[in-house]
Every structure is written in structure tokens, then in C-alpha cells.
Length: 275
Image (cartoon, rainbow, N blue to C red; front, top):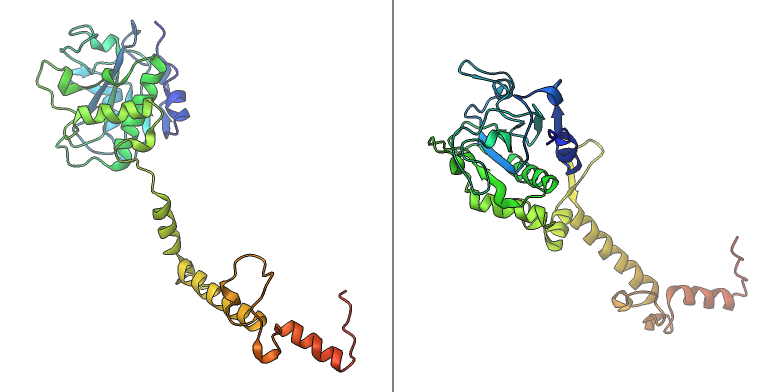
């Protein structure tokens, strides 16, 4: 079974931000036997350098400890393509008992581990990244597993994430319905229009000016006044080309242009041809 040298490309192709660590394609504790899923973790640190422990290991366990690290802003760090020590002892349907390291890709998401510091960007990237990997290996969301679900050693990661809900959203990404996955709802047309109308147009000095909605309303009001002045009362209610303007009774049932033409004709002043 070839190691997943495609990890960075697959994540990036799904619109995710990826950092490739030098030497990742040759890093690991041997080769995979096959790929059966994704095992989700938290780092239990929450700092900007959590990745160093995942890559280099700890005093009691040599790195790498997972193939991927997911930062709080949704960025994936690709640490290793080979086998990593992350699963420990445990079981999951369809996975070898106590031997998942050789069969599943581990993602360590940066978090304190108390379930309170997940960011929306991180959670969406977590689900999207799992879906991208599962799609590549031909598996569905049932093989997206929390370490706490697999472990026989009392692990609690990823803390604060309901894995049933998580899998449901991962499956939606797999099915091509990302806009229905939790935290990724697209705004409705009405919400988009409302946000646009409430946007303020900057003044030349950079300070916020009138809202787009107010400018459009002012423009519509004055355009309507101009139409009335030119074509007669009630003409502002006509949409599209004005084939039958209302005209001004005071001008002999003429529009302003028609009245001017009548004056020119009475004064025997020939109108100038348009240039």
C-alpha cells in the first residue's frame, strides 16, 4: 500500500490552506498497510507550537505522532506521509484492534482539550479535511472516528465535539452538500440583499458615509421627481419605456419637451439638428 503522498494536494484541492513541512513525504514509522479512515484528536496544548510535539515527539514517544496538524485558523500542517503513533490501543468496526496506526490517518487539531476553544474556521476545516481524505480513499463518514470512540485507554479527544453530529456534517461534504453542513450555511438571498443595503459607502476621507440603501432610495426619489417634471404627474409610476406619458394639463396636455417644441414652432424657430 503506497503512503498518502497526495495528502497536501487533496486538502488544497478542497479549498483548504495547507503548509507542507520539509521532509514530510519521507517522515514516518514505516509504510501503511492500507487506508481505512481518519482518527480525530486534539493536541491538549492549544499553542502555536503544538505542531512541534506532533512532528518531533515527546520524551516517552518518538515523533511523528500524526500525519496532520489542524491550526485554530483552519490551516492544515502536513507533518508526515508514513505511519504515525497516534491511535494507541482500541477498536472500531472494520479497523484492526489495537493496530489502527497502520491503517488510519491521524489529525491532531490544536486545542486546550477542554472543549471550549474550537473556532468556527477550525471546525469547518476539520470536517472538510476529513471528507476530502475519505473521498480519496473511498470511505464514507462512518470511518471518521474520534479517538475517544476508538480508544480502550480512556482518551477524551476531541473534547467538546459530538462525533455523531460531526460525522453527519462530514457526510454532507462527501455527498456534495457543503452548504447544509453545520456552521457553513449559505446566507439566503434576502440576507445578502439586506447586508448589501446596510453597507456604508466610504467618504473621500475614508470615514463611513451613507448606506447603499439610502443612496439608492435618494436616487430613486430624485429620478422619479425628474420623470414627473418632464412627462407629467403620475408618470413616475410607469416602469420601462414610457410609451404613454401622463403629460401636464397646464401645458395643454403636453410633456415639457412637447411644450418647448410647440413654443419653438409658434416662434418659427427651427430646432437644431443633433450633432
